[in-house]
Structures are given as C-alpha cells and as structure tokens.
Amino acid sequence: MKFKIAIAADHAGFQMKESLKSYLQGQGYEVLDFGCSSEEKCDYPDFAEKAAKAVSEGKADRGVLVCGTGIGMCMSANKVKKVRAAVLRSFDDARLSREHNNANIACLGARVSAVHQAQSLLETFLKTSFEGGRHGPRVQKVDSLLK
Ligand code: RB5
Figure 1 (tube, rainbow, N blue to C red):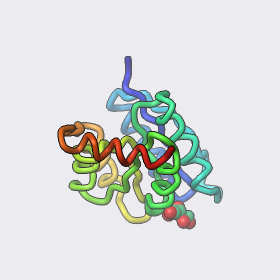
Figure 2: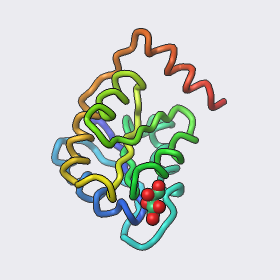
Figure 3: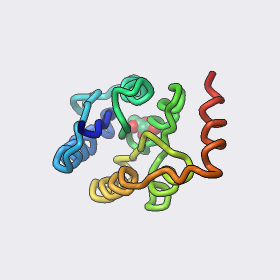
Figure 4: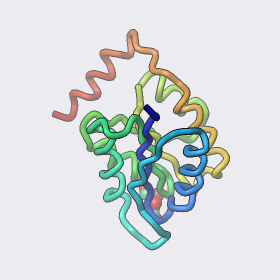
C-alpha cells in the first residue's frame, strides 16, 4: 500500500503546497490534499486542523503543512491529539525532529524557505526514522500532555 501524506496550506503557502504535492506524487507517495485551493486569503488553523486530524486518525501516515512561516500551522496542528508537528528550517530540524521527536507533521514556511529548500527538508524528514530508545518515553510524555 502507498505511503499516504496529508497536505494543506493557507493562502501564503498555496503555491509551495502545489509544488510539494507534485514532487511527492512524483516520488510515488499518495497525497491527500486538504486545501486551500487558491491564493485567496484564508485562516491557517482551518486547514491545519483537517490535515492534522487525518494524521491523528491514521488516514495519513505523515502530514505536510505550509503557511508563511510554518509557525501558525505548527501551533494549530499540535492542538490535535497524537500529532507531533515541527517547523523545519534546517537539515538538522528535519533530521532531529524525526530521530528524537518522532514528528509526524512537517511545517514549512513559504515566505522563509525557497521551494527547493522545502523540498529537500521534506525529503530528509520523510526518509529519516525515529531512533526510539531513550527518546521513546519522552515522546510518550509529550503525547500524554493532550488528554
Ligand atoms: C498569513 O499572512 C501568515 O500570517 C500565515 O501564513 C502564517 O505565516 C502564520 O503563521
């Protein structure tokens, strides 16, 4: 079965979402697009919620959220149970958010990262495994903060 990725953006992230969606499809991933569908102004929590719930409910294996900075999307997604969203600005963010935090949603900023950078951050994020071990109980504690 294909690895499924839930993707969403607000108006600021719309163009980057479209590029990342094509990239991911080209890599063989199944992409579930939760909007938005144009550059018309909209509110990022509405779209973060939809994609984050798909990850939380197991309908998607990972999520990708894009807004201007990635920050608003990340704050919103982390309000949803079982979601561990991380803003990715550097290679180390992409790698360590997976290895140590078992992040399941990557948040990217279309106003702060170029598309090719976002694409390579995403590639690292998707190809890096959780290390487990000492990080396991810590991640469980993170999850238990949302009852
Ligand atoms: C929209 O102008 C902008 O505030 C939003 O895309 C995001 O960067 C918020 O975190």
